[in-house]
Length: 225
Image 1 (cartoon, rainbow, N blue to C red):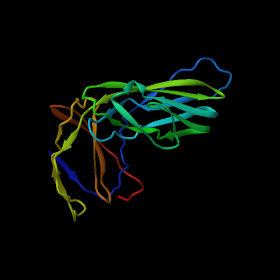
Image 2 (cartoon, rainbow, N blue to C red):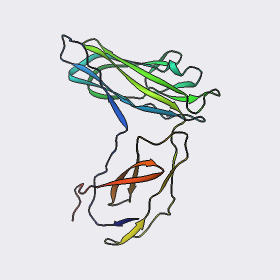
Image 3 (spheres, one colour):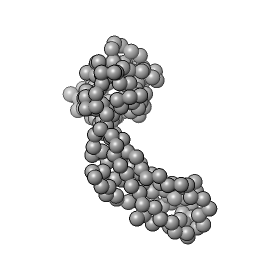
Image 4 (cartoon, rainbow, N blue to C red):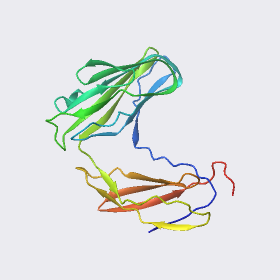
């Protein structure tokens, strides 16, 4: 049972990153600048509909980088997926794109594509998306995202919205989840509960027949006591 006491303190939103930092160590290079790829660890492609946009970032570390370009290759999914190119990237072949960033100072997010399953795709099929980032003044780096057709699908216990809760009032909720997908949710899930004024917290759960929760409470985004 979850008991929440509302106060007038504001709270900072907590973020749980599901992306893995894919860093390749380049060979010795004349320039101090290095490239760092920030790619998600897993991409879940549903058996129907369309998958999410691929989350990808590129950073120039140690200085500015010139003529930065990222080649993305999902050809291992040929026959299982089709690609819808988005952002400023261009197709370079079947399930391949190139994203020209140009001069880079700091970090830039890239929105290359999303995938759609073919009729032949089956739950449990796997593949990989690979990345190669290059620049005229930095060594190339590579990265990879594992792809699974299917994946976890979480549903939560529904609750009606609460209105008119006074400061100091106490209310109770018992969060519950079920995984109705085709793969275990072994990487963890996040539940974010908020109201429109002051209450923010997040719960990190690892789901395997039951849900264990760890709670972090954050205070203060400039609010008063």
